[in-house]
Image (tube, rainbow, N blue to C red; front, side, top):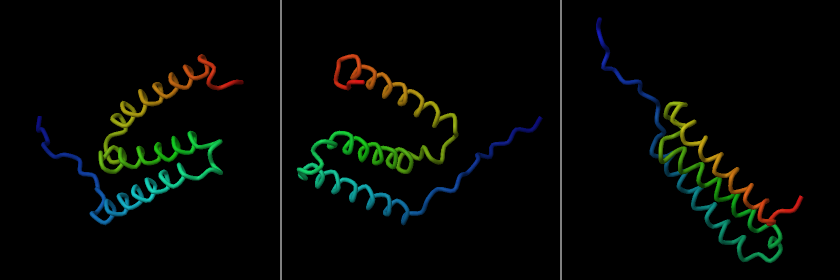
Length: 101
């Protein structure tokens, strides 16, 4: 029985893509800083900052950690526990009365 030592190669992004992603991350960071100083968005400041941070986290994990190009199993092993952790944190916020239904 012959064994193959070939590895499956995935097309990784070019250097230009990494520079573009870094630029977008820089812009999102600038938006986060600017939003913090705007009085008009104070009522929705925390959800807005959490959303921007989640977008940045997704981009970093997807591109710079190559999770976007890895096996779906690796993605599931990373995203699954992350979703559970977020659900537990939200449940704790409801239990402690931070959010009211």
